[in-house]
Image (tube, rainbow, N blue to C red; front, side, top):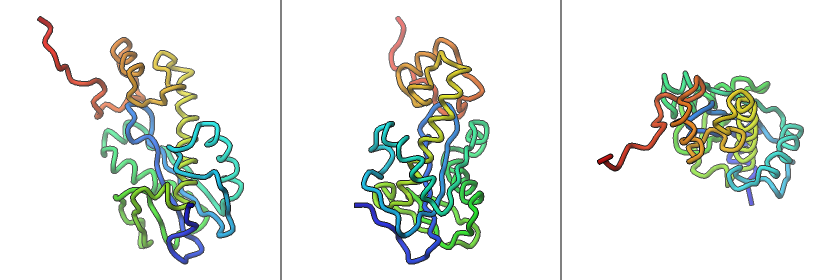
Length: 199
């Protein structure tokens, strides 16, 4: 069962990101505050939920949250500052867009940078332990998926509607055939290194 909060602060923010391991598209973060009365037996780490369940949870989370926000950091910025810094920047941007000033922040994972003077706690596997982080993971994932589905309409050859920019065989085969777009992360290894000699 997910815990409601890490700290006693009323305005405790949960934040998480999606898309760190992708070859294309943004890294997306969500931040939100859930009311102490929030209950949902389906909510969990977005990676453990089906697409159908994530989509069903999205409006529930949005309508139940005290406030929420989502931010995308695009590939050009990811290439400039690296994916870890871009992930943290996305979380900062999402927190910045909230209508409520944060009193305490709980973050999925083990790396974060201070957001002003707001105290925070990094929690490994936080998206499977705390409701607000799990809810943020669902929003980050669903918003990023929608972003990639829209990009798919312009670049159908990469099938981002299905693979969402992750390094699937299908995506990498398309890169070999069609090359890279402005939406690919140039600082990532787009194709595996050659492991055999052509003799």
